[in-house]
Each structure stands twice: as C-alpha cells, then as structure tokens.
Length: 194
Image (cartoon, rainbow, N blue to C red; front, side, top):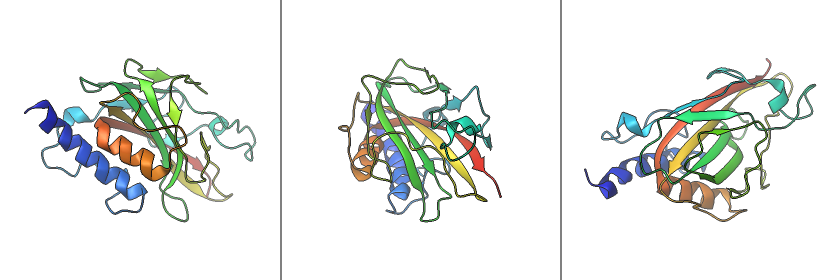
C-alpha cells in the first residue's frame, strides 16, 4: 500500500472519532477505527506510572475543589507508534459530562521523538487549543460531588509538526488532528464518587 493510501485509513478513522466530540456524528473516541482496512499497527500503547487503564486517577490530578487536588497533568508514556510520526497531539475528554463529551485539553506539536510526558510537563514548542470551556490549557477533572466520570487521554501520532495555531477553536484543532493522524492510543482514568 502506498504511503498516501495508508495515511488515508487512519486519517479517516481519526476524523470519525473526532467528529463525535464535535457532535458531528460518529462514536466519539470509543472503539477501534471504523474503516475495515485499518491495521492494528495504527494503534499504540499508552500507559502511566500513576494509574492503570480503567482504574482511578489519583486525586492530585483533579481540580483543587477536591482535597489534595493540584490541577496538574498526569505523567504519560507511549510506545509502538507508527513510522513516519513527526509529532504528537493529546486530547483529554470526559464522555460522561452532563451535556455530552467535554474536552478538557488539546495540545499538539509534541516532538515526534518524545515517548513520555512528566507530571505537569511544560512544553516550549507545543501549542494548545481551546477546550470546551473556551480556555487554553489543561482543565482538570472536576465532576460534581456524587458523580463519577471517565477521563480519556488519547494520544495521536501525526504526520506533521504543528497542525493548528495556539488558541484554535475545538473545531479547528480537532479537525487538524484528524486530518494528520497516522496512529493513536489511549488510557482512561476514573475520578469522582457515586
């Protein structure tokens, strides 16, 4: 398969996934690529030294409303990304929000040789788009008392360095990420109580 043809499969899958967040249809970030020809190599492993996939996210990564909340980003690691990756983007969302999926964080321009982010990482060359609250930067988990939500950290391998400008709208940033996606991986943490 030619490079151009190979990229079209994950890009289309990424567009479908990101369209769900924008309310444009599709199934959000959940599930495997919708394209029958999508290869397993387009999915890579994401992990964290502080929580396991599907388990509780430690309180320090939540908002300061919660005792012990420090509103900082958790450390993340990834491996098995596709050849030709030039950079990474991260989208953190909450699919359990009252009004539908809530995007907490959109960051891109993470160097393609990077394989991890430390807690509270500050990335000089990265750009951040607006989140659902129309703010730039990380909006920590902060579910209402008595609610428990899932927080998905999806890392996208991209075929370009920086696909959007700082402060881009969700439609612009997620659309640009979808257009340039060559692979993706995800880790989900739960936070809150019922």
